[in-house]
Amino acid sequence: MTPYKEYDISSSRLRNKTLFSFLIFVVLIVLAILSWRWLRHEPKEFGAIKPIRKVLNYNEDVFNKFFSNNHLAKPFPLSAAVKKVRVNGNVGMSNNFDPSTWKLKVIKSPGDTLFVTLDEIKTLPKTEIIFDFKCIEGWSQVTHWAGVKFSDFASRYGLNEEVEKKYAGLITPDKGYYVGIDMPSMLHPQTILCYEMNGKPLPMNQGYPLRLIIPVKYGIKHLKRIGSISFSNERPPDYWYEQGYDYYSGL
Ligand SMILES: Nc1nc2c(c(=O)[nH]1)N[C@H]1C(S)=C(S)[C@@H](COP(=O)(O)O)O[C@H]1N2
Ligand SMILES: [Mo]
Image (cartoon, rainbow, N blue to C red; front, side, top):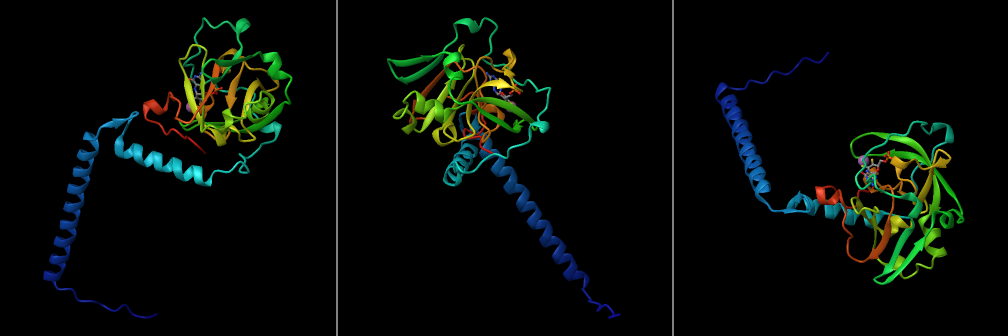
């Protein structure tokens, strides 16, 4: 065993070191208080104070640079899908909704709107997806959905110019809930206009007749009960973005 070498620190040196550490501690506390006060008084932009919004926007740029349509959300076996799917959030799902008159409104440009029925949508190739659905509240569950890929829908209805735009905006029929989605995510091969859950028509509270399932995003973007879809180069309004959440909300 090698014996410890003993250091002899004089008490005055020890006192200096303690004082120095304490000084740094005080400086850091003062800096923290000052930056908190500065942050608090910065104006808000879409629900988040400006400097924080800047960081969120920067994150979006980074995401966009690395995002690729070859990057797939992990698929799960059917046996992993839960039978009892959680119902979360009913904004924009008012009771006076009449499913018998529902048609999907595709707003190509002002004055040029397509109306598509559920039966017409069901004639397109059906895509199934089983994935881990993640909510920003901190829960997730493996769930099973089916519908038509948005990219298939777009080619079937000749939305060529529309998908050249930067964003799609989806709104519930009562306009209470709305999301904006960047076009690369909208055209992602796992993004579907969904009409089935666990092999059956979507339940009313899960978005009957049609909802968005977009596995590359958090739950907030999976709008239930689509009324209309529109296209733009500017960011469409987004319900949770206005409450201060990240616009992109990618996974
Ligand atoms: N119309 C509408 N769609 C919505 C919401 C909502 O409140 N209204 N909540 C979102 C959130 S936060 C989540 S996590 C998912 C939940 O989907 P589920 O109820 O089918 O589990 O729906 C999303 N779509
Ligand atoms: Mo959520």
